[in-house]
Image 1 (cartoon, helix red, strand yellow):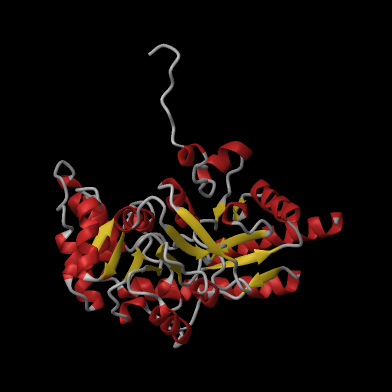
Image 2: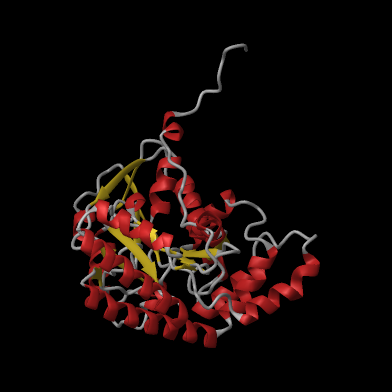
Amino acid sequence: MAGKMIKIPKHIQQLKPYKAGKPIEELMREKNIQKVVKLASNENPLGPSPKAVEAIKNHLKDLHRYPNPSSYKLVNAIAEKYNKKPEQIICSDGSDSLIQYIIAAFSSEGDELLSSEGTFIGWYVNVNKFGRRSKVIPLKEYHYDLNGILNNVTEKTKIIYLANPNNPTGTIFTKKEFKYFINKIPKNILVILDEAYTIYSQSNPDYPNGFEYEFENLIVLRTLSKSFGLAGLRIGFAVGHVELIKELYKIRLPFEPNRLAQEAAIASLSDDDFICKTIETNKESLNMMEKKFKELKINYISTSANFYLLLFPSDKYAKAFNIECLNRGLILRYLDSFGIENGIRINSGTKEETIFALNVISEVQNTLTKKA
């Protein structure tokens, strides 16, 4: 064995590790600053629901026990809330793991997976991780080009991924557009509809809520990491045809999600007041941001989510903008890894966080404008 190395598959060698938004503690340590606001990861600035916190406290004594492998209580809570059959639902450690399971269950080496440029980075990471052939269609004015995707379906296409609202652009496609699209897709091609931010857009009458559609080749993803404030516990679920969900259970890790995540999710789903407060907080913060962006002449894309995509004159300017914000204690998301190299994403915050962020952004924009 001397001199021999373990052979790493080419598609694994070419992978780049996922780069998350910078942690608050890391920036405080690096810059030696005390005040840091993070608006980089589309988290709920209100934290978790008080009901979720109480549920976690009540179940700490059970940490020595494995959770129910079928997530029985949580699955039934989801089924009741969204008027679905329990057999149509599977829970896991968030959207990333669900995407991973779907790719593993419903595609093989050599199959083609189709989506858009400038969408959720977790999709690209998982496609590449499994060594699948990836085809991406350019955005059309920062929206999904559903017709472009339709026109690129081939016999090798096995899965299509759509995010609505899209991350990181915040844009949506409409009921009319989705109905036309899904009815044109061959039934042997699986469509993933990722609705991580649906709570912020469902009041729009043109928004196509995925739970209102019943197609044998459609799986809808939801997460409790964002609007429900459970990002630290990593939990999400998928709803789809019974036969599809049955296949996903075969490859899902046996005790996923963990016990505390399941209990917190059940409690969160019952807290309508918390979600209403989340929506109102988001609306107030985005309104403040929009007003300031107009004043500073920063280009942005109108959003249906809980974040804005900011567009700058060049990738160099965007990178400098991000660094200068970090130097002042504001963590935003530079979008080079998403394929939008002149873009930065900022999510909504509390009123205090928003004021802090806009003061920093004003200072940075004025400084860079003078240098230009």
